[in-house]
Image (tube, rainbow, N blue to C red; front, side):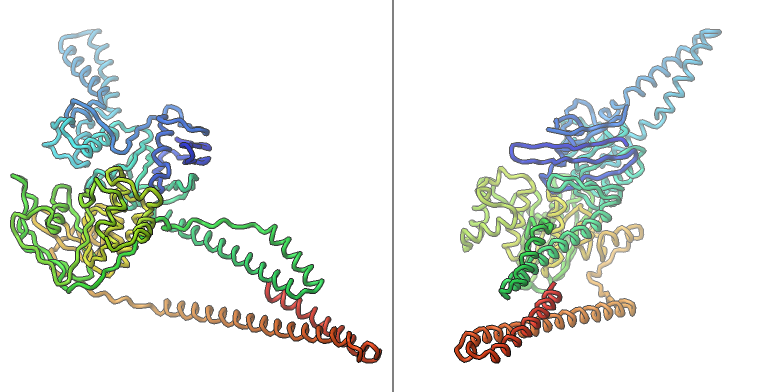
Length: 638
């Protein structure tokens, strides 16, 4: 065991963020920490790193464990070049290498015993140099930098000139070069393109050490991890396997929890109805039975209502009306910024109902392409034609379509003036903005919150052609799944740019790979793209018809399920009929018993002992039949 956390608690004012969180990570584990935004993942990492103290609990690292930690948006301040910054991590090898060169120089001027002593010292130092990676460390640095998306021309760039994302990549490279026993990464793929993510996957998969990752990149987690730690409502749960294994087990547990709750509620309601009915019989024995059942009901364990997955945000995408079959046609589109040519004579077309993902390396112009379609920036050349009745809804990853000087409420009301205040509040509540939150300024929102405002506007637009630029950025896994389900149910057309491979895999029916030579078309999802990438043949087909046949075995299974369902329904109907007959019989007997009581009080029967005996015999018989009927009703109803 390399890391252990025992009963970690952390509260901020009235928010009990971490509640007795306990888990452990073994040596060479590749573990993921997941949970919705704001659940405390980063706080937990900071506690592990000693940057924040827990209210209670203990963090234990194995003796002499070296730890490398990459926070989100790691700040790297340096006057060095990119290459020299990574090189500085191996200063020990640089110094040792200088000592070896110095000894080599001295050996040429020595002889005898002095030479023998220096040769022995040189041999030991050389062995240490080789053992600690002295022969390969420079090539490893080059490999890490290129893997993370830096070209050879970038190596000499000063870090002070880099963007925030590039600085984070340098910080990641620096951490990887140190090769600590335990690597802790907080959202490491945020600033990487697909090629860099795939390189990092391979690197971490083969890393001879322990890796602990916070990430919303489900495809990335699927490739790497063998353990998933989920932080939910302050509590930690451990699942063995990768993300797909976790999702499968989580769904089974969720369904079991929902069923247990529903069954518990059904049993409580049923017992309450039985008690009510027994009391309505208004007989001593039935009242005692009712009281007995009430005591049992009070002792019954009440199952807490589970928090339904995907219950946090509600997103439904519905076009107001259908578009024509030809949604978008682009011919010979070109764009350059000064000497930087992004694309030249780019052509493609999108048909109604297609879900098309655009992928490609950073800097190929994917987002620019979408901005040109949405007339945010002009093209240098080419034509863009939208089809008849096409209404575009645009999701901008930079949130430029939002107004920083407006409140969330005004952002919606100004664009949709026909909505009432209540309707606007209801829409915003579906996207987790309630109470006074709706009056927050857009400028004060986090990236995830701005994303939710954009999704709300997208839903209200009722557009039939959605153009989305990195829609899953800043969304947690649960929100991503909600968006995926909404897109998969959407009957309109979708064109989007994304580097989220899991998202692409679930939502794309076609992939356009933007390269220097134009679009390469793949008729399938991301797994299909990977399969075909090695043997690319540019295809202009935009649709394929696939017939899904049901095997005889599946048909047989379906018939068996149908038969079983019918049998259950028949049994339920039979039970309901028996209960109805019994209740009718009980009512008839009770009515007759009441009639006998009335007759016994009349002069005709009071003064006639023979008739009284006759009525009493009938009443005793009714009581016996009622008792039998009550018992049978209770047995069937239970």
